[in-house]
Amino acid sequence: MSVYQFKLPDIGEGIAEAEIVAWHVKVGDTVEEDQQLADMMTDKATVEMESPVAGVVKSLAGEVGDQIAIGSVLVEIETSGDAPAAAPAREEKVEQPLADGAEAPTAEQEEAIPVMAVEPEPAPAPAPKAAPKPEPEVTAVAHGAKVLASPAVRQRARDLGIDLGQVKTSSDRIRHADLDAYLLYNGGSVSGRGAAPRADETIKVVGLRRKIAENMQEAKRRIPHFALVEEFDMTALEETRAMMNRDRGDNPKLTVLPFLITAMAKAVVDWPMLNATFDDQANVVTRHGSVHMGVATQTDGGLMVPVIRNAEAMSVWQLAREVLRLSDAARSGKATREELTGPTITISSLGPMGGIVSTPVINPPQVATIAVNKLKEVPVIVDGELEARKLMNLSLSCDHRVVDGWDAASFMQTMKGLIENPIRLLSA
Image (cartoon, rainbow, N blue to C red; front, side, top):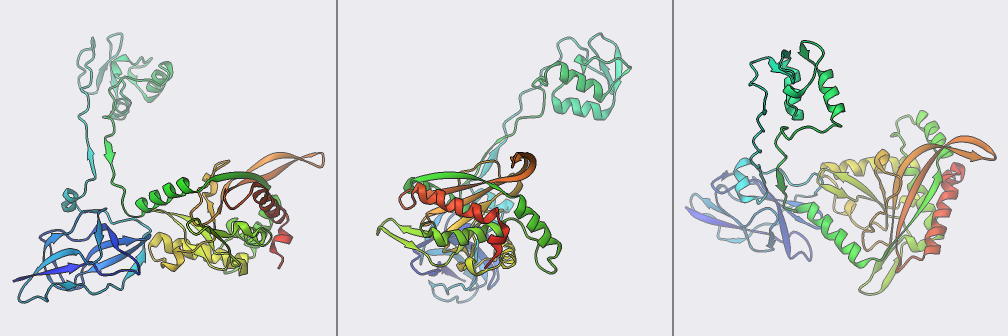
């Protein structure tokens, strides 16, 4: 019997340490050669660590969320016979970005993860002061008469914290309507006899969520944001989109997003200071000739930003396919490192949940980002006549060190001229 020390290999140029985002084994487990041991994360990507030997796990380097230095021992495995001498483990080849977050720990792993929910003991329910203890299916009402109540009514009363002895009824049975009347009479307030309060939950911030927190904190600390919100009349564009979708054939269904990306790509030709990155350490601004559009995508693990390369060269149909492909890759964890790095400007949309106004946070080293807000139909006076028009706000956040207010306003007006005139937008 001997012990093999599996050391964390060099998993990327310039990487000094990696974070443990998931353990797939625990001490005492028997592992086979090439069995997955752990997921390690660096720069929004995960690397799966596989065992080079078979044996029994003797020790693990840390807990989920711990940072492990490159070259340090990650796992010790007891092997039968003579195991290879302890040496840096071979470099793992499997690498994929984190999208859906770390795998949930098993019951045996919970002791190693400082995530817990402490269930407080519920306060004892106050006993009725005057009502006698009800017999099964019989309830004493305020005037003392015995009435029936169905199990469903009783359960609802318990869930709401209602003492059925206080509920008035005009029949021989308390019904749901009587509970409704009781709630209405009492202004929706009931006694404190309801279900036990939900327990506090402590969640350790690890993996992608930790990266997001760090990036947002750094962005707000270093970038002097300013925001500009402009209203866009989307009526003509929505008619154009509906017409194109009717004849789309094998193309994916068009959302408004590819049209907005097209408008942004055209507008930055006149206002290149928004399609830029700022190295504030070297005090150098790079205005990019190509538009590498970051598309903020919500995943189970948190917000990720896959990148559409050379968006200015794509049609709306090509953009629609690329948005769909990249968002699916991000959510499934199959996006590559290249597909998650290097945006020059970002667009973010929450669709119908977008709200009326938002102030998106810039992701450095970018200097601008646009958030898409909710589209709504409202009455508008057009040429003296009242019409129903579809309006939507776009929110632009800029780095005031690089972009002036005039530049931001001019950029939005250029976009407005394109979006409100689909023929101009879709022309070459």
